[in-house]
Length: 366
Image 1 (cartoon, helix red, strand yellow):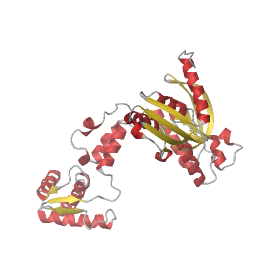
Image 2 (cartoon, rainbow, N blue to C red; image 1 turned 45 degrees about the vertical axis):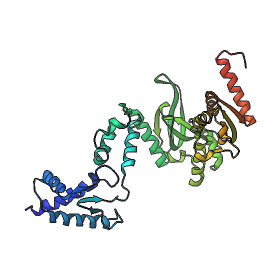
Image 3 (cartoon, rainbow, N blue to C red; image 1 turned 180 degrees about the vertical axis):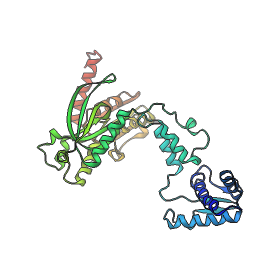
Image 4 (tube, rainbow, N blue to C red; image 1 turned 90 degrees about the vertical axis):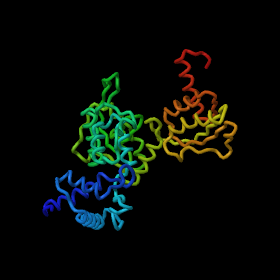
């Protein structure tokens, strides 16, 4: 017969087993009483009676319910001769855990050793050799300097302190043409597999009102082009919008008007007709172009489109960023596809872009 101290330990082992070894949404979903007895014997060296396990499960259900972790009457329940469990409140589910591991495995910005920690937290979600059969993982580690830069940026955003940054241009693996700037950090963004600091340039903002006009001083700084960051103690240096509502609106607009990390203060409406040799040709070109535009509601299919004839007519709301012309050029290069642009300003600027491209290719036809 197990002593009282071991009985108290047993209830913790049972709770831990159901929380970490049994899943409500995939992986191992059930366990028999005999399997529980064998597990407890392996952990404690003692064989427990069935009725003591029944009593412990009842106590665990009472604890989980009273602590607000579930709204169900029983977290652990029987189905046939097996015990199962329901989902806990705020619990990470199998699809979510695997998505996190996949994302970490394929980005160089997070130490891939973190995957092992998450897998160990949710062993039932990652049975077998999950990582080798899912995505091809990277073996790189984020360097200590980048981690410190990001920590300083997050600190500045949270405490509303200005930053003194040294910013330059990448030449190989070195930074050149470096300049110092005082900026007020607003947010971090992720684009083109890089972190970007979105911040107000204090020098550009000194004579601006703290309303939507302040956005003209909003800039985007690529973090791997920052040589150093110092968090400034003097909070009076931090420049901010006068209300959080205005700031949220302006940041959302700034990010939505971005194309490949280039932002524009202007939003334009652009009509494009994609004429493909076949329906699939038009769809292939459309898919590549629309993926560059942030926000699903910013690309609309015209009512009079004729996709059955390979003609796709779209209306696009986007920022007038320099990379718009790069994206239009890419769209033009799809095989068996012609495009027509319905916006005089864009056509004029795109024509200049094409002439520069022709000059670079030493063509005299344009």
